[in-house]
Length: 262
Ligand SMILES: Nc1ncnc2c1ncn2[C@@H]1O[C@H](COP(=O)(O)OP(=O)(O)OP(=O)(O)O)[C@@H](O)[C@H]1O
Image (cartoon, rainbow, N blue to C red; front, top):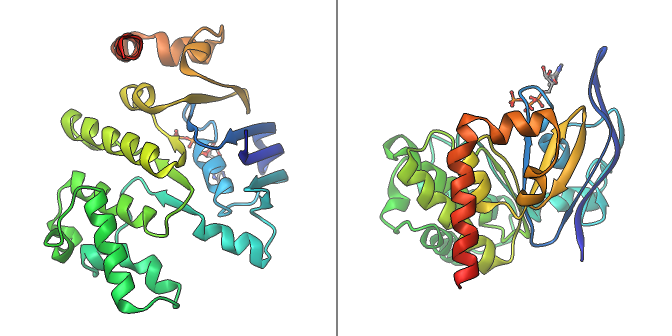
Protein backbone atom coordinates (compact mmCIF):
# COMPACT_ATOMS: atom_id res chain seq x y z
CA UNK A 1 0.00 0.00 0.00
CA UNK A 2 1.14 3.50 -0.74
CA UNK A 3 0.76 6.16 1.92
CA UNK A 4 -0.59 9.38 0.41
CA UNK A 5 -0.85 11.41 3.62
CA UNK A 6 1.39 10.83 6.61
CA UNK A 7 0.89 12.92 9.74
CA UNK A 8 3.15 12.25 12.70
CA UNK A 9 3.51 13.70 16.16
CA UNK A 10 1.32 16.67 15.32
CA UNK A 11 0.55 19.23 18.01
CA UNK A 12 -1.66 22.27 17.57
CA UNK A 13 -1.86 24.86 20.26
CA UNK A 14 -3.66 28.21 20.27
CA UNK A 15 -2.43 30.07 23.34
CA UNK A 16 -3.13 27.74 26.27
CA UNK A 17 -5.57 25.63 24.30
CA UNK A 18 -4.23 22.36 22.98
CA UNK A 19 -6.31 21.20 20.01
CA UNK A 20 -4.17 18.27 18.76
CA UNK A 21 -1.86 16.38 21.09
CA UNK A 22 0.72 14.13 19.45
CA UNK A 23 -1.69 13.15 16.69
CA UNK A 24 -0.82 10.55 14.05
CA UNK A 25 -2.85 9.81 10.93
CA UNK A 26 -2.19 8.05 7.66
CA UNK A 27 -4.21 7.89 4.47
CA UNK A 28 -3.48 5.16 1.92
CA UNK A 29 -3.96 5.51 -1.82
CA UNK A 30 -7.49 4.88 -3.10
CA UNK A 31 -9.21 5.28 0.27
CA UNK A 32 -12.16 7.56 0.99
CA UNK A 33 -11.43 8.69 4.52
CA UNK A 34 -13.98 10.69 6.48
CA UNK A 35 -12.75 12.75 9.36
CA UNK A 36 -15.31 13.02 12.14
CA UNK A 37 -15.18 14.59 15.57
CA UNK A 38 -17.13 16.82 17.93
CA UNK A 39 -17.54 20.53 17.40
CA UNK A 40 -14.23 22.26 18.05
CA UNK A 41 -12.26 18.99 17.99
CA UNK A 42 -10.00 20.43 15.29
CA UNK A 43 -11.21 18.83 12.04
CA UNK A 44 -11.09 22.00 9.97
CA UNK A 45 -7.71 22.92 11.42
CA UNK A 46 -6.33 19.47 10.57
CA UNK A 47 -7.70 19.70 7.01
CA UNK A 48 -6.09 23.14 6.61
CA UNK A 49 -2.82 21.71 7.91
CA UNK A 50 -2.97 18.94 5.29
CA UNK A 51 -3.42 21.63 2.63
CA UNK A 52 -0.46 23.59 3.98
CA UNK A 53 -2.71 26.54 4.84
CA UNK A 54 -1.92 26.32 8.54
CA UNK A 55 1.24 25.26 10.30
CA UNK A 56 1.06 22.88 13.26
CA UNK A 57 2.86 23.86 16.44
CA UNK A 58 4.93 20.68 16.17
CA UNK A 59 5.09 17.54 14.07
CA UNK A 60 5.01 16.97 10.35
CA UNK A 61 2.47 16.58 7.58
CA UNK A 62 3.69 14.80 4.48
CA UNK A 63 1.67 14.38 1.30
CA UNK A 64 3.10 12.09 -1.39
CA UNK A 65 6.22 11.97 0.79
CA UNK A 66 6.74 15.73 0.67
CA UNK A 67 6.55 18.02 3.71
CA UNK A 68 3.62 20.36 2.95
CA UNK A 69 5.18 23.05 5.12
CA UNK A 70 8.60 22.69 3.53
CA UNK A 71 8.30 26.05 1.78
CA UNK A 72 10.35 24.82 -1.19
CA UNK A 73 9.43 24.28 -4.84
CA UNK A 74 8.47 20.67 -4.17
CA UNK A 75 5.92 21.61 -1.50
CA UNK A 76 4.53 24.32 -3.84
CA UNK A 77 4.14 21.72 -6.62
CA UNK A 78 2.00 19.60 -4.28
CA UNK A 79 -0.80 22.14 -4.70
CA UNK A 80 -1.24 21.01 -8.27
CA UNK A 81 -1.55 17.39 -7.19
CA UNK A 82 -4.64 17.82 -5.04
CA UNK A 83 -8.04 19.43 -5.46
CA UNK A 84 -10.18 20.98 -2.75
CA UNK A 85 -13.94 21.38 -2.66
CA UNK A 86 -14.80 24.12 -0.17
CA UNK A 87 -18.03 23.98 1.73
CA UNK A 88 -19.71 26.95 0.05
CA UNK A 89 -18.18 26.18 -3.33
CA UNK A 90 -16.01 29.33 -3.20
CA UNK A 91 -16.72 30.21 -6.84
CA UNK A 92 -15.66 33.62 -8.15
CA UNK A 93 -18.91 35.49 -8.62
CA UNK A 94 -17.57 37.72 -11.41
CA UNK A 95 -16.51 34.73 -13.53
CA UNK A 96 -18.75 32.45 -15.57
CA UNK A 97 -19.04 28.79 -14.65
CA UNK A 98 -16.67 27.88 -17.47
CA UNK A 99 -14.09 30.49 -16.40
CA UNK A 100 -14.26 29.29 -12.80
CA UNK A 101 -13.39 25.77 -13.93
CA UNK A 102 -10.71 27.01 -16.35
CA UNK A 103 -9.01 29.25 -13.79
CA UNK A 104 -6.52 26.74 -12.30
CA UNK A 105 -5.45 25.85 -15.87
CA UNK A 106 -4.95 29.51 -16.78
CA UNK A 107 -2.92 30.04 -13.63
CA UNK A 108 -0.39 27.48 -14.84
CA UNK A 109 0.41 30.00 -17.62
CA UNK A 110 1.71 27.25 -19.85
CA UNK A 111 -1.33 25.90 -21.69
CA UNK A 112 -2.70 27.09 -25.03
CA UNK A 113 -6.29 28.37 -25.11
CA UNK A 114 -7.73 25.48 -27.13
CA UNK A 115 -6.40 22.96 -24.63
CA UNK A 116 -7.79 24.96 -21.70
CA UNK A 117 -11.20 25.05 -23.40
CA UNK A 118 -11.22 21.33 -24.10
CA UNK A 119 -10.10 20.39 -20.60
CA UNK A 120 -12.58 22.68 -18.82
CA UNK A 121 -15.50 21.49 -20.99
CA UNK A 122 -14.56 17.88 -20.34
CA UNK A 123 -14.58 18.46 -16.58
CA UNK A 124 -17.99 20.17 -16.79
CA UNK A 125 -19.30 17.16 -18.67
CA UNK A 126 -17.75 14.84 -16.10
CA UNK A 127 -19.85 16.42 -13.34
CA UNK A 128 -23.02 16.33 -15.45
CA UNK A 129 -23.06 19.91 -16.76
CA UNK A 130 -23.44 21.11 -20.36
CA UNK A 131 -21.39 23.69 -22.30
CA UNK A 132 -24.46 25.96 -21.97
CA UNK A 133 -24.21 25.69 -18.17
CA UNK A 134 -20.66 26.93 -18.62
CA UNK A 135 -21.97 30.31 -19.78
CA UNK A 136 -24.02 30.88 -16.62
CA UNK A 137 -22.85 33.05 -13.77
CA UNK A 138 -22.59 31.58 -10.23
CA UNK A 139 -25.48 33.77 -9.01
CA UNK A 140 -27.78 31.99 -11.50
CA UNK A 141 -26.90 28.47 -10.32
CA UNK A 142 -28.80 26.24 -7.89
CA UNK A 143 -27.01 24.93 -4.78
CA UNK A 144 -26.52 21.53 -6.40
CA UNK A 145 -25.03 23.08 -9.54
CA UNK A 146 -22.63 25.24 -7.52
CA UNK A 147 -21.27 22.08 -5.88
CA UNK A 148 -20.83 20.44 -9.28
CA UNK A 149 -19.00 23.42 -10.72
CA UNK A 150 -16.76 23.59 -7.64
CA UNK A 151 -16.07 19.87 -8.03
CA UNK A 152 -15.22 20.31 -11.73
CA UNK A 153 -12.79 23.05 -10.75
CA UNK A 154 -11.24 20.88 -8.02
CA UNK A 155 -10.66 18.15 -10.62
CA UNK A 156 -9.44 20.28 -13.51
CA UNK A 157 -5.72 19.75 -12.84
CA UNK A 158 -6.40 16.00 -12.70
CA UNK A 159 -5.41 15.60 -9.05
CA UNK A 160 -4.68 12.27 -7.42
CA UNK A 161 -6.03 13.51 -4.11
CA UNK A 162 -9.31 15.29 -3.43
CA UNK A 163 -10.29 17.11 -0.23
CA UNK A 164 -13.98 17.70 0.48
CA UNK A 165 -15.30 19.94 3.25
CA UNK A 166 -18.91 19.05 4.07
CA UNK A 167 -19.66 18.09 0.44
CA UNK A 168 -23.41 17.66 0.92
CA UNK A 169 -24.10 20.44 3.44
CA UNK A 170 -27.03 22.58 2.34
CA UNK A 171 -28.31 20.11 -0.27
CA UNK A 172 -31.74 18.53 0.03
CA UNK A 173 -31.78 14.70 0.34
CA UNK A 174 -32.23 14.01 -3.40
CA UNK A 175 -29.48 16.38 -4.49
CA UNK A 176 -27.29 15.10 -1.71
CA UNK A 177 -27.76 11.52 -2.87
CA UNK A 178 -26.95 12.32 -6.49
CA UNK A 179 -23.85 14.30 -5.45
CA UNK A 180 -22.69 11.37 -3.33
CA UNK A 181 -23.13 9.03 -6.26
CA UNK A 182 -21.17 11.42 -8.50
CA UNK A 183 -18.29 11.44 -6.01
CA UNK A 184 -18.39 7.65 -5.80
CA UNK A 185 -18.26 7.31 -9.60
CA UNK A 186 -15.40 9.80 -9.96
CA UNK A 187 -13.47 8.15 -7.15
CA UNK A 188 -13.68 4.85 -8.99
CA UNK A 189 -13.08 6.14 -12.51
CA UNK A 190 -10.26 8.53 -11.68
CA UNK A 191 -8.63 6.35 -9.03
CA UNK A 192 -8.77 9.21 -6.53
CA UNK A 193 -7.82 9.24 -2.89
CA UNK A 194 -10.43 11.28 -0.99
CA UNK A 195 -10.32 12.95 2.42
CA UNK A 196 -13.49 14.60 3.64
CA UNK A 197 -14.95 16.26 6.67
CA UNK A 198 -18.65 15.60 7.09
CA UNK A 199 -21.30 15.64 9.78
CA UNK A 200 -23.82 13.96 7.52
CA UNK A 201 -24.15 10.30 8.44
CA UNK A 202 -25.79 9.29 5.15
CA UNK A 203 -22.87 10.76 3.20
CA UNK A 204 -20.40 9.27 5.63
CA UNK A 205 -21.70 5.73 5.34
CA UNK A 206 -22.39 5.92 1.62
CA UNK A 207 -18.82 6.89 0.77
CA UNK A 208 -16.26 6.11 3.46
CA UNK A 209 -13.88 3.20 3.11
CA UNK A 210 -12.47 4.40 6.43
CA UNK A 211 -13.59 6.68 9.21
CA UNK A 212 -10.99 8.64 11.14
CA UNK A 213 -12.26 9.68 14.55
CA UNK A 214 -10.83 12.79 16.14
CA UNK A 215 -11.39 12.66 19.90
CA UNK A 216 -9.30 13.33 23.00
CA UNK A 217 -7.13 15.57 20.77
CA UNK A 218 -5.92 12.61 18.69
CA UNK A 219 -7.10 10.31 15.92
CA UNK A 220 -8.35 7.51 18.15
CA UNK A 221 -9.49 5.29 15.27
CA UNK A 222 -8.91 5.15 11.52
CA UNK A 223 -10.66 2.04 10.27
CA UNK A 224 -13.52 0.70 8.13
CA UNK A 225 -16.97 1.90 9.31
CA UNK A 226 -18.03 -1.41 10.86
CA UNK A 227 -14.87 -1.54 12.98
CA UNK A 228 -15.25 2.04 14.14
CA UNK A 229 -18.86 1.43 15.15
CA UNK A 230 -17.82 -1.48 17.30
CA UNK A 231 -15.47 0.67 19.40
CA UNK A 232 -16.40 1.53 22.93
CA UNK A 233 -15.84 5.27 23.19
CA UNK A 234 -18.28 7.96 24.41
CA UNK A 235 -17.90 10.05 21.24
CA UNK A 236 -18.63 7.07 19.01
CA UNK A 237 -21.71 6.17 21.04
CA UNK A 238 -23.02 9.68 20.90
CA UNK A 239 -22.18 10.34 17.25
CA UNK A 240 -23.22 7.09 15.61
CA UNK A 241 -25.53 5.30 17.95
CA UNK A 242 -27.81 8.11 19.03
CA UNK A 243 -31.24 8.69 17.47
CA UNK A 244 -29.91 10.32 14.32
CA UNK A 245 -27.49 7.49 13.76
CA UNK A 246 -30.12 4.82 13.42
CA UNK A 247 -31.27 5.72 9.92
CA UNK A 248 -27.71 5.91 8.66
CA UNK A 249 -26.96 2.53 10.22
CA UNK A 250 -29.81 1.09 8.19
CA UNK A 251 -28.22 2.54 5.05
CA UNK A 252 -24.94 0.87 5.95
CA UNK A 253 -26.68 -2.40 6.59
CA UNK A 254 -28.56 -2.27 3.28
CA UNK A 255 -25.36 -1.39 1.44
CA UNK A 256 -23.73 -4.49 2.91
CA UNK A 257 -26.62 -6.64 1.84
CA UNK A 258 -26.36 -5.24 -1.70
CA UNK A 259 -22.63 -5.91 -1.79
CA UNK A 260 -23.10 -9.49 -0.69
CA UNK A 261 -25.72 -9.94 -3.38
CA UNK A 262 -23.43 -8.68 -6.14
N1 LIG B 1 -6.69 30.71 14.41
C1 LIG B 1 -7.17 30.27 15.57
N2 LIG B 1 -6.90 30.93 16.71
C2 LIG B 1 -7.36 30.50 17.91
N3 LIG B 1 -8.11 29.40 18.07
C3 LIG B 1 -8.44 28.71 16.97
C4 LIG B 1 -7.99 29.10 15.66
N4 LIG B 1 -8.46 28.19 14.76
C5 LIG B 1 -9.17 27.29 15.47
N5 LIG B 1 -9.15 27.59 16.78
C6 LIG B 1 -9.78 26.81 17.86
O1 LIG B 1 -9.36 25.47 17.68
C7 LIG B 1 -10.42 24.55 17.97
C8 LIG B 1 -10.64 23.65 16.77
O2 LIG B 1 -11.27 24.38 15.72
P1 LIG B 1 -11.74 23.69 14.37
O3 LIG B 1 -12.47 24.73 13.59
O4 LIG B 1 -10.59 23.05 13.71
O5 LIG B 1 -12.75 22.59 14.89
P2 LIG B 1 -13.80 21.69 14.10
O6 LIG B 1 -13.63 20.31 14.58
O7 LIG B 1 -13.63 21.92 12.63
O8 LIG B 1 -15.16 22.27 14.60
P3 LIG B 1 -16.61 22.37 13.90
O9 LIG B 1 -17.10 20.97 13.69
O10 LIG B 1 -17.42 23.09 14.92
O11 LIG B 1 -16.42 23.15 12.64
C9 LIG B 1 -11.61 25.40 18.36
O12 LIG B 1 -11.63 25.47 19.76
C10 LIG B 1 -11.30 26.74 17.76
O13 LIG B 1 -11.88 27.78 18.51
